[in-house]
Image (cartoon, rainbow, N blue to C red; front, side):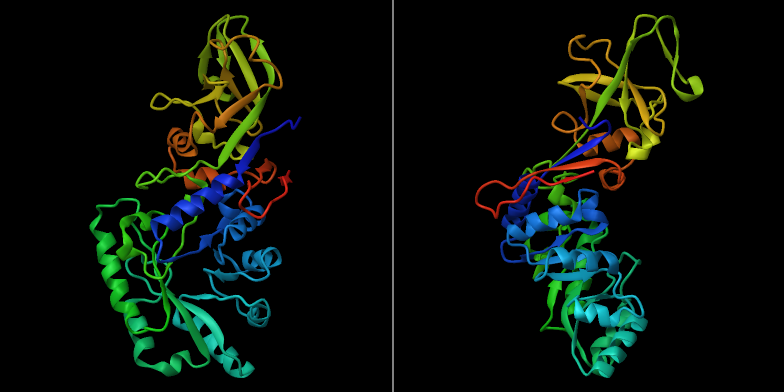
Length: 378
């Protein structure tokens, strides 16, 4: 038995979510964003599962992630959103990476490298349509369309942008960005267009263009505007280390913030903020946090500490609440997004906070896919 927090990732659920997303945008290529270790779920097994489902293009953030992913997927198209660091151009060429280019300085550096190598490099141009983060401004992008010499030696495979408010279907900025993107890409008729992120897929076909880029939707979380039910692909749990009956009215945890009464049964769990169970899950006057033990709701008591948390099992049958019993932190009874609401954050942050020391166990793909082994990464 593992004596800490476990994340159980269902690769078949991820595969099913990929199929659902493809069905929602049947005319577009469905790529996969596996940045931040596939949103905390493990880039290697998740990418392998998606590849087995027919996914041929992947996005990451950092160059190092792209290098690691190439070892896993030797034939896939891989694009790092940050582009290529200075000095890594030759390695990127060797690994057949397709960098996203975000500004004129990046572009000029790669153009000069391609010229020196006398080889054409495939790149993705990122045009900003309203996020004001990365990407060419409208005026910079206009320069590219007017002066072809700026792109000499470079093959523009895709032009992309990123939606700011796609999780709010009625937000006017969605259509504003779509219109700006359509206008910008008209200057590159041969390049494929990549626009819709996870939520953007469900805004309708006029947002799909040639390629969609789902990321966290593949885990089935935070998709309240999805028109089809996605499958939750992750379960987070922790074992009980100890059960005690409180001897007298007292308090529990650091700071003595929460009172407990004589006769209450408390279970101490092997998990804390060092596992990614954020300290903001600590109960307050405004917010209560709870987990589940075989379907029974168990409230979190006192502060979340580094390695330990305490729950109230007073209303759970004694034969169920014992050392070694598994407490569901997120899973069938409570989604990662519902857990995030209790922490005052979003599911993205909860997922990516799952710590390295958390054991990740992978349920394999089922029939109709290339069979995967039962992965386990401590």
